[in-house]
Length: 204
Picture 1: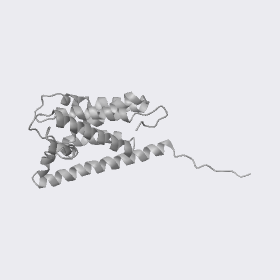
Picture 2: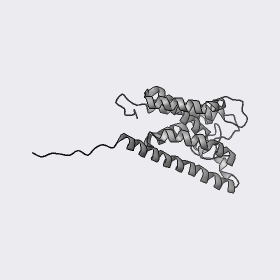
Picture 3: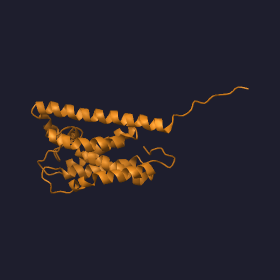
Picture 4: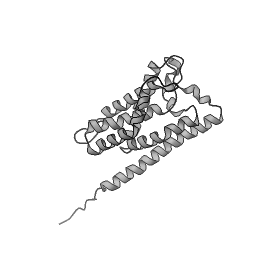
């Protein structure tokens, strides 16, 4: 009689640990890219600001993909770094594919929303729309997927970042509330598109 030995599946704790390490690497790389761009731009006199989103200008439509990587000052990027790190890490815990799909959806929806609705003559740059997109995705995912861990993460995110919600409203000079609102919409859309089926796999 012959016996076949099955290779044991990886322990859940080990899988979670690997995903956490991967998420740290992804966000470290993402933030490093933002800082390299900022330092190079600052030393050059900020020529990259011309790659911001200029509303309803057809020749500038492609800049919806470059604007999130550009900041007007070191303070601008410093303010964005902590929430981007925390929220991006939580998004990346779902895996690289999910992270890039969520980020792409947020950048596209948020950028198009700014391009269509921002005030004429404005020029929008910065990663704050991505931050609101990650926030919307995490909260909506907890509600849509109805998994205990996702609900817990959604509640934690809500408690930690409720104070930034006023930035969704118009009236703050120099702040693109359109970028925040449409970034949030992009995150909500990503959560719905990537929602889990009953057996646990995502729709997309």
